[in-house]
Image (tube, rainbow, N blue to C red):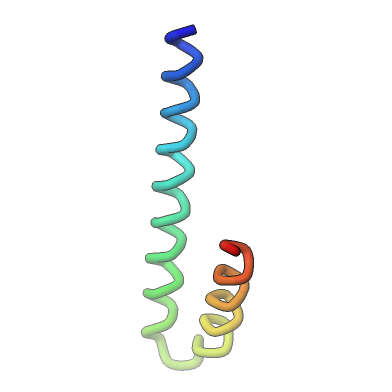
Length: 51
């Protein structure tokens, strides 16, 4: 049973890191000129999916 909790914890941590990293990538693309429309769409989709 202890191993099960470890696996769940690692999975949750992995997802948290992945989500954070993808948000950082969106921010980086935001700073580029010409990526504003993409950034705006992506941010709106992210906000909608978090609810």
